[in-house]
Structure formats: structure tokens, C-alpha cells
Length: 116
Length: 112
Image (cartoon, rainbow over all chains, first blue to last red; front, side, top):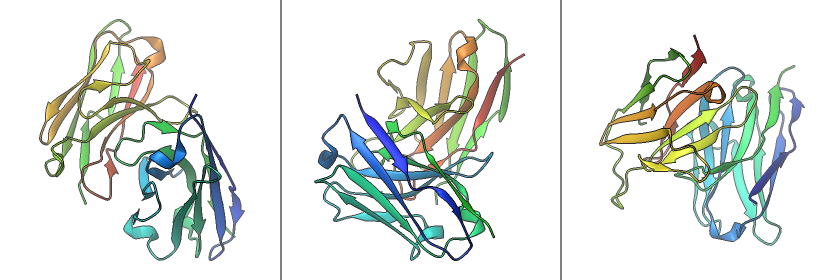
């Protein structure tokens, strides 16, 4: 069974940093693109970043470029999102998802609240 | 960026009756590899999104056959042949053809 479990969420002040993690299991992690998708409270969905199987290709939505970094550790079946210079508009539930174009499996999400 | 629009944004339904959601993209979703990357997701209240349909018309494993997807180019449709109570939620279309991949605003389906 495919499982994606996010962690690392919480309350952070504007300008602060946070690192999210996603533990993957039930499938050959190194065979798949992986993605982070976010959903602001009561709002729609936004693809934030994705990363190729070997980490050689990464894509970011413009609003997070230069502030967020996606990475993966295929030896630990783990996906990460380093978030710096956080803004109020980054407040959202962040989901880890398998693949990029298809997003066929999602985790339960972790809530990030950026507020003073 | 590719803009995805959906209609209607709110869809009150009668149980047992059909329902249909339209999704339009601002440009063709045919990718350079020849595939059309249009997905449909269901998000039930308090849950993570769940993919129902991928590449326009392919139903995911475990998805009831009352859900079907169709369309081409820039115009797509999700149909529910007979709505059941468990279908209440928000439905999103999403394009995976052009980065950044983008979602429609969502269609809220609830029971009349």
C-alpha cells in the first residue's frame, strides 16, 4: 500500500524558516517524480514544486522560487521542502504527492501557519 | 501560466441523478509526448484530494464506474452517472501538461 506521511508543520513567524518532510513507503520511491502541493485555508490547490527521480531536475512555481528548495533522499525514501523567508501567504496545508503530472497519491498534509 | 476554469462552481444535486462538471484550459493540454494531461480530483470534507481520472478519461483503481471523463484539447468534462451521498465534496480539474501545473477553482457538489 502506498503511504505518504508529511511532518514538520507548525507556526512560524514571517521571515522564518521551516523544513517539511515526507516519508514514503509501499512503492519504489526512486522510480517516481515527487511533488509538493499546497492548499491555503478554504482555498484551492497549488502545485509548489516537483523533483525528478534522481534529483537532477526541479521545478518551482514563481511565488516560491528562491525561497523554497525541494530535495529527496532515495536511500531513505524521503522527500523534503526547505522553506525560507516565509510569508503570510505561504500559510497552507502542504501535501506530498507521488509523480508530477498525475499526482496519483497524496499524503494527509501538514499545516504551516505563518503569523506573528 | 495555463488558466483552468470550471463550471459550475456550485452544483446542488439530487441523489440518483446525473451530474456534469465542465473544465476548460487557456491552452491545449496536449504535451510534447503526445499525451493529454488532464486529471480530475475529488476532495471530500476534511480529507486530502483523491485522484479519480487521469489523462482525460482513465479511471483510477477503486473509482466507481459511475465516474467518467471525456474531452480533448482545451475542453473537458467529468460526469457522474448517478450521484450518491459519498460523492459530496469539491471536484478539481488539473493540467499536468505545462509547468506550473495548475488546478481549476473547484466545483462544490452537495445534495439538494
